Length: 133
Image 1 (tube, one colour):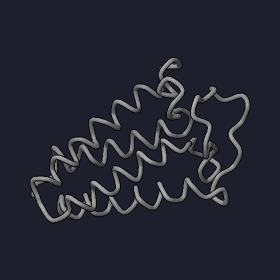
Image 2 (cartoon, one colour; image 1 turned 90 degrees about the horizontal axis):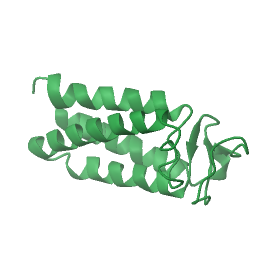
Image 3 (cartoon, one colour; image 1 turned 90 degrees about the vertical axis):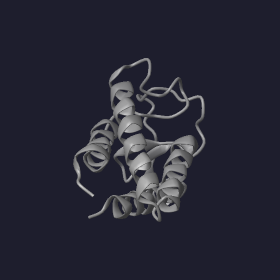
């Protein structure tokens, strides 16, 4: 897989996940025992596992559109991969810190999001730094 294909694949996946988060069919209710959110619109657990809200969905859509947009350029796809790797690594750390695991009440980054973000960061890091184009 090339870096361009990586950007396209991540882009499509992020768009699909971002859109799925807007449909209550794919979300279970947000438990009252979870950290409180200031932005409660569309909050729930996507596929019963991953906490999301409207801002979380918009972040996924933005990253998806960016990935699809940079698909035509190897250099831009590399910047995308590096950015995704760094951003998601930061999200992993934030998810582990109680005061930051909801991004100050705006975006939930806790629960199963932690290991998912770790996998996303690792995949992006591989293409950004280890994969030979």
